[in-house]
Image (cartoon, rainbow, N blue to C red; front, side):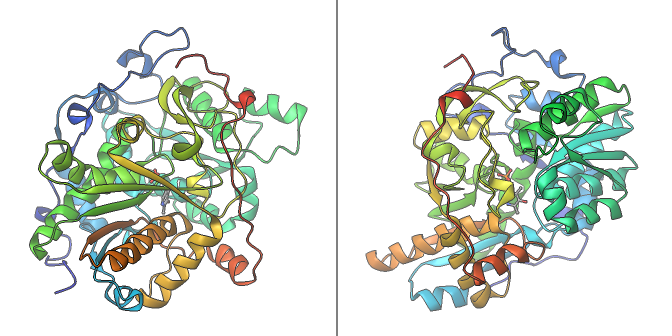
Length: 451
Ligand SMILES: *Cc1c(COP(=O)(O)O)cnc(C)c1O
């Protein structure tokens, strides 16, 4: 049977009871976040922006962290477990002996994996009496997920949306408004940082780094408000491990185990979410599985970035984070995979790339759309441009298996659908897509000090 969907709908007994925290299993000690003065960040330093339960998770060394019952029920109502599907027709078209499986997160209400952490973050904020959340969004996937999270728990949400996306991608903005969120084009006049930028450049198109800075400033200045981040931080990756925990169980039911696990990487949450429960086996010497993290050549953080401490945002309001980075002032070329345009990557992924457990790989925009069209025609689902990076790697690995005559089991994360990204598909079909290749950080983007 191809579909591992053996469940009654909305049955929370199918939802994993704990998330998996990879920190205690890493091959190297995870370098702490640092304050600008070089001192390690203390949990209390984060209190102005996060509720205490999320701070506790951020610093946790426990291998498993219980998912509260109320949240498990919500996950079930929203459509978890998501299906694990096998791309049979794609295998046939490629003529590969490999089996290609994918975990499909596009069935979640906002069309991607992001609601997994948005719901959890809204839940913990609500629990601690927070009334309002701020966040940033690029293309709008994270903003729409947090807007829904807020709606489900009765929290107000303000989303600072990168101005260029606000103008070019109206549909996700409308989704956020449907869920009741306030959507502000960033840079804006609502924050000091935004006003400063607009005074020198009223036409500033914005960037994710700028929007993060505005959202944090707003949270710090308002007592009833906390900030919410959609990727990069330990607690966000933790929440996403529900994907891999489900996939592991679903594959077990099918009697298979992946030789190769693949995901696209923006900040790293969907990749970590799918792969870490399998990475645990590898780190503990119980498997030989390989892991491929895919990024765009237009924002090649892991393949061309430098490893060290950098800020998570352009205004230098976040702590210094240990990661591969293209520099926090880096503004990537405008590609359709907006969710992969971040300058950095989650610290746990940085450690695993550095130690060779993860193979990073970069593809260009035309390559990933080629793959996405092949996949859509074979399997029916139109992938998000971000997810198409994983599709491309899965296809390449399946072709490699064909060359080698090996029956590899490939698993990738189809992190979202592309039904709100049809402009990108149109540009591709009309031959208008340009490829961008960034060869590394510019010195002026790298103003951080610590190595
Ligand atoms: C946001 C997003 C990504 C990239 O973010 P990660 O935190 O790296 O997962 C990938 N795919 C989709 C569909 C997204 O919305």
